[in-house]
Length: 202
Image: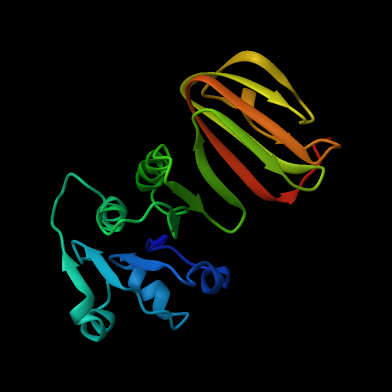
């Protein structure tokens, strides 16, 4: 079963569709965020220092206390989903808060089973060939951690076995005329940050 992991950040109405037919795991205060949309998680995991008393009481039978200080609540929730056999895990409510927690969440995307989703972007790792299709001008960016060798075909700006380092070189590219882009990661670690909007670079 696919899983949805929900962190303790504001959610949008898209959570209603994203949550359908999935194992839903709330990371601590993510349970409160879900209840705002009247969505019940299957489990709530974390050190339980962020969930409200009202929600903790309502979901008492769903709570799993995990005080492991070496892991974030998101990591604990992802581990639970994997233990339950989930092969694809989407994470929402992960960005926009503390920068250290946001960066830690980005680290989860290097697991090929995981996608990070917010209102504007989906973040996932590329380890080989990735093909994306969308409207001309749809924005995407590549972030190397710390470097990768990459080829891009079909985009506004193409690359041929170019070494990218973490920084601005891979930021803001656009899907080209054909509506199809091929991204090949030849070596290293790279994150694809794919936008759901068109933003032509001037």
